[in-house]
Image (cartoon, rainbow, N blue to C red; front, top):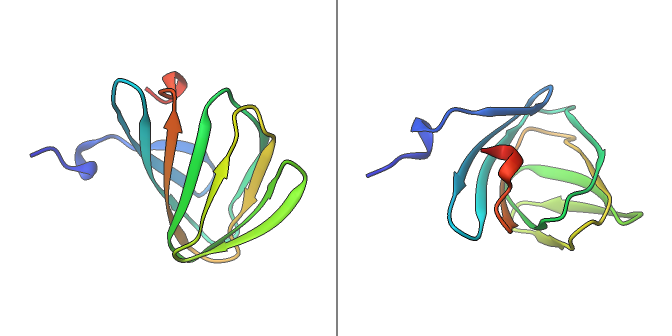
Length: 104
């Protein structure tokens, strides 16, 4: 069986590493984020669902500040500007549709 640990990690930003699985219509990411890490303001054509497995991720999504804790999720619409800060170590599952071609 395939394992997420067999997929080379992609460095998204200092302290943010993601392992990505690509299907025909979606990409799923297992993302480890170190305390103090920042993912700058960006947007993409993909709808994104972010689910917090462990820790906390503070985000600004479409100009609205949200603090996501373990068990929380947020659906980020296509082309919506968003950014993130990790006040503690966290693990996140991100789902993108369509496939994140730039993460292949």
